Image (cartoon, rainbow, N blue to C red):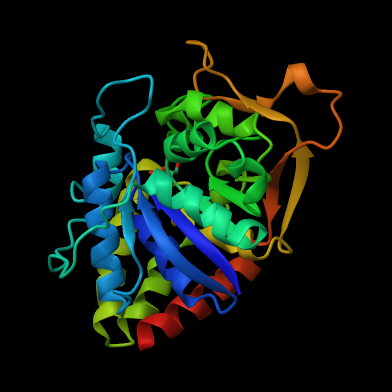
Length: 316
Ligand code: BDR
Ligand code: CA
């Protein structure tokens, strides 16, 4: 089986990414790294522990990553994030305090060590800012070519951003880190707003989780209903909530239901274009582009698989 590390700012859709990775038959989730974004890094770590406990997987270690970008000295949660995910990151649903602690080792070191242990068998899926991966690459540049594949949720190429006309939230938090990753030799797949805004979940689906009459099913339904309600206000035209982060896990494991274009990408860090993900003018004619950008998705196919996986996990 492939090995997977998730690097999460847990977050409602990050929580669904954990569930998807646990339910997928063809991969072992070997650890979760915490990052900042939807919540502060320590809270992302605690939320991941809570979600793992809810799903009965206290065997999976959770590591703390960086607390802010290298170009800032602190981080504050944006009001829009607190609105979308709730102040506690999981839709104001109260889950019990975790019965175990976070790991001592840093998330950055965990990524580096796992890259050496599993190399091409390792898939890394960051669904928050790319600070931890950029640091891992700086500390040990070999990581870029060791890791089999990095599939990020982040960026937007064919559609506008969601926190500015050009920037998607995860990239916006740390465009410098994202640019280091985009310009590295990493085998990178970008799952951005181009596709994540087309895979939507509604209360019709969360009701099916509720009908399972299990603790995991009803807690996940409560958490995700909060997110669906916010989307009704912030993005009423969509008709559901976007499955950003679990779609990145889905495409990382099987890209057959999405169409993509290989490009040499970079991330703009100028004031006017802060966080824009776009083709790299400096590398237009370079061969073997390193970023596979997902541009279309068979949403019905994905949603069916998503529901099959999560419902069977929550039924246990
Ligand atoms: C991304 O930003 C976060 O709020 C979500 O968890 C997702 O990773 C969407 O832009
Ligand atoms: Ca996220």
